[in-house]
Length: 407
Ligand SMILES: [Zn+2]
Ligand SMILES: [Zn+2]
Image (tube, rainbow, N blue to C red; front, side):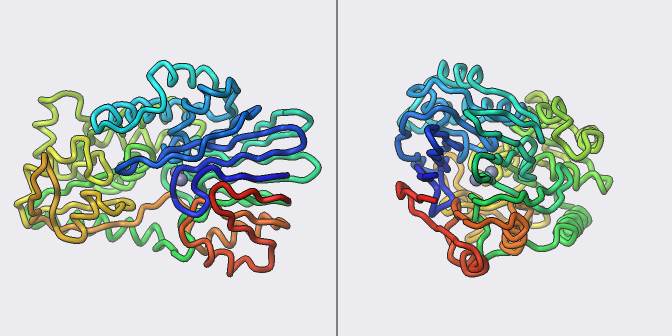
């Protein structure tokens, strides 16, 4: 077996992995990192079949470009395909606005949708004398790990979370010979989720008691829904806005991929959805506003910020990773945002809460040990050495992009 990462071996960038096994060439994810400028994987070779682990752009963002050269089926789950379609159209829109090079057109996204071969969790497929089994990855609804069973067994994890979240259950180890595992949080652990939720809700209580409002910038995919479910524990006047509204509907349509569709529905019913410009005006008086974008880069969040940024009693509670150069990072580091070309001060309280959907370092170590593999190939991480140190009882590989690992 030969493995060749076309992207995101040594960074949390656009993941793409080609596995050559017997006479088959298979591709796992083919992403694009939506940075400024965007990052892309290396050009793929001719392949026989594709697999998409989940709908985040760093995993799916270049699938339409891949399909321009390769007329192949891509195995994935229903919610992954629908949310990926939404994000792909959005990425094309951003490329047009920002003047980034376009690697595909709208028609290619349409063709991509037709190329998907839909699978459910725990289902199996026979492919060229090999059996493929699909497992839940616990990262976002529909996220999958792919297990390839030939003469030996190989597991590709995509992004994983082993801890239970409100929205979905955590994943479990799968025994295999070769483990290809993400390493995003190598060297870093998360605070206990219950503890994070409590601090987050207590902070909202404090801001409201002081007469302020709270803006919660969220990612559309997974985070909007998780935060609405956490907020459902208290009795706030909540409004939610942005692309998370559509994603929530997609998830409810595929309730089998959720921990509890009823709990998500309740959380959405407990909040008010912004449906028009006039309801957006109403939402500006809400106690809690949950809206995209998670890094305060675009989406309705900037409009809400214009209203409350001068109020020292109000709070902005970030709920995820803030990349260098983003407005979210600017807020955390300097209390400033960039809006329509101007850099403006923000007087509100600014805090960040770790609602990550990735396994932390210790979770990854435990997961890998539970898989009990012979070989571990670490990817999708900047500090893989720390994981490699803790997994030294196994044969660990930390390849670079373009480097071929032969097992
Ligand atoms: Zn992801
Ligand atoms: Zn990822």
